[in-house]
Image (cartoon, rainbow over all chains, first blue to last red; front, side):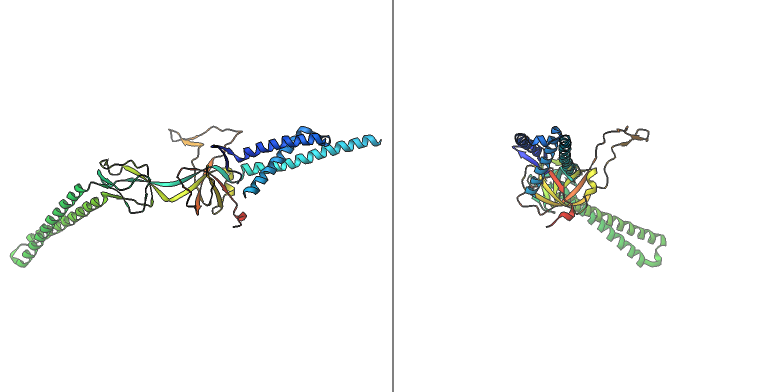
Length: 70
Length: 297
């Protein structure tokens, strides 16, 4: 259940917030990789693409988390 | 000729690719938003139980406290005793009064039968009088009997018993304390009524049905508990409205743009709570209602 809090040494953080953080770090990494591989030449509006990428990653992590905890 | 066309295609391709990713992201974002705001879950649920405020039915000094703080008691267990001597004396008094009334009743009976045996030698008036005396004596006897029963009841009530199965909480009663009738002195948590109450936004109510399975996480505890929606409350206070001093309706000024969802308590019955989980009334829980058809066993 992705809705319960994560207990980080007594600080209760909503799981979703933690996932957002994870997704952000992952998207930074992925952006670096895409940059190196020259993928951005295929992209029209880079900032928009980055935002979309972040949301997709967040969704993916959320789904994964749900599957693990189901 | 060929070259500019190629550029246009490439450009269009890039735009389309980006928009496609954005469209997918929009769908996913929408789904996440739905999950977070529409799905019937709440972080604000609490373990609750009914608390019986135990009060003595008679006044007097406490002579004996038979339970300890946080002790489990069964229905009918004696919780504490009030010094009974006064009530024993009252019972003896009542017994004596009843004996007196009984003697008076017998006397009146004898009187009446004696008058009757005398037949015509005595006036009707005297016989009627004797009969009235008998009825009065009978009434007095019945009253004395009721007084005796009352004295017995008081004596019985000098011993306070647990009305429900439960746990004594916050016990603050010592032998020697004076308790007054009807004044609560002891809180008894009715353990048979332990339940979880979730405060759900009104926007989520449509997805909550009686009988739906519920996942319950107590704050800071790993064990997943299960429950079932038992009932949804029938009414909450209308916060927009009060009654003014002139008995006129007093409605809050309107707030046009932002609306806050009110919350409605939903009662969740716990199912098969593991032995090692300590349910303390008041604990915070996160609950999530699962749609019934998703249950596979």
